[in-house]
Image (cartoon, rainbow, N blue to C red; front, side):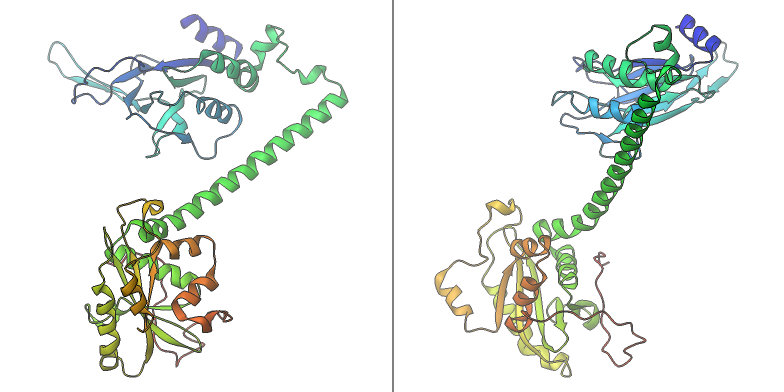
Length: 402
């Protein structure tokens, strides 16, 4: 190692080092007082990369904004066999106690640890450590990695990017010396490099768009399919607002649980009371009766805001996967037939979710507001200043209620 570092320093090159952390077959119980169960010394005697073995089934992701040889390594390591172990990495220094009792010494970690693959918490599981002077670059990879894959990356991507002189000295066929290329070769190479850079940039943008879409969809998806209480009510309110309807939180407006959960309306159409319920098993039939009572007592609570019907939205059997649940909220024939004579419509959250994820806003509006909403299209929202006489309503943005 000393000869490698000295030679690289003499030539003014970066010293590339591949270091393996952990042991695949090690399954001993680790002392809880230690901060990690594996380590690799990097740079000097006082800096190391510690590793904590992660649970089986960990699926890492490529670190954000990665490019070049490091991104290529990340892609290659994602092909490791399923069930291969991973270690969460962290940089650490050393605290020494003098043997004569005269005191102690602290040696903080040096350099920087750049993530290449990260776990679900964003901690690196594959990383590159760079020395403070930038003269050393250590790639810390998990045990159980195919060396054919890593060495192929080293020759084809890492050395050309970081130490091209090594390939030149070895007269490697994988090294492209621009000083010896024809104009045609240089032009084609530059065009290819530009194309790869454009692809990488577009891919990063699409990945960012996907992350943002997932962050926006996850609260609605989880709330509708597995939620109960305020989490479920918030998800339903967000879906109805996305479909262009006005949604008012009645618990907040009236104070307490005096009526249904939501008042939903649209321009030119009668408002509806919406009751939202989550049950772990089959839905109880008396939930319909609760909504009927809310409809009966509504005129005493808000006489200036008439409502015509009610909508019961139920997340039934929410402990099961949606594909394992019954398609309809209620299945007893006599009860289902009786619903036709009541001013109450019943919708399952699975049905509502499927409309929402397909952006079928017409289906959602029709289900909640009735057939009159089939041809209705929401107008552009107006600010309070533009409509001072409009009733005060709360626009839902998906935030969780306190």
